[in-house]
Length: 186
Image 1: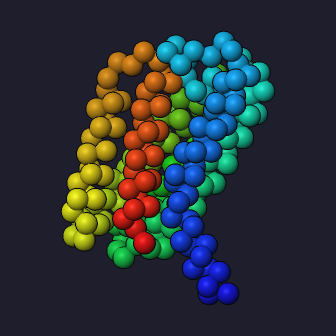
Image 2: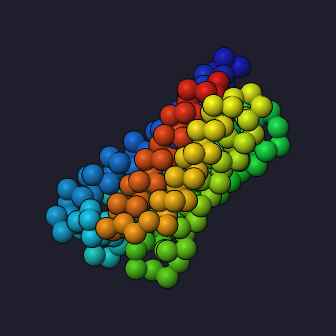
């Protein structure tokens, strides 16, 4: 039984990257059913709103991705050696909840902008705190995570052609964090 649990724990390390892959697969499938979608004009969330054909495809991808974010947060908490790492995992857990809420409150609903914005805020704070928690052991890892956080903040301040272009940029940064997490955290 212990060996099975250790295997599951090792696999959970890949959950952030898996969340990203799932997001992109469901998003691309959703785009294929919605020829009106323009990456340079729309938001990804439009694929889950009332304007979309089969909005459940996009929203299902968000919910499945959120489950993987929750698994990542649990892994972060379990492998943390200090309270800051646990807090980081907790922020990531809240990010996962907000990600699923984007599906519950799709584009066009009142809380949508709030939940989608707070998904990114919580995820990047969680990543930053995790990097800070490892600063004594992994200075390069921590510095790289800090740079990712700064890039996310700067990116949010830039005028992008569309919400989708900003969202893609931020998701790529979170994917880079997930890859770094896989490479550095055992």
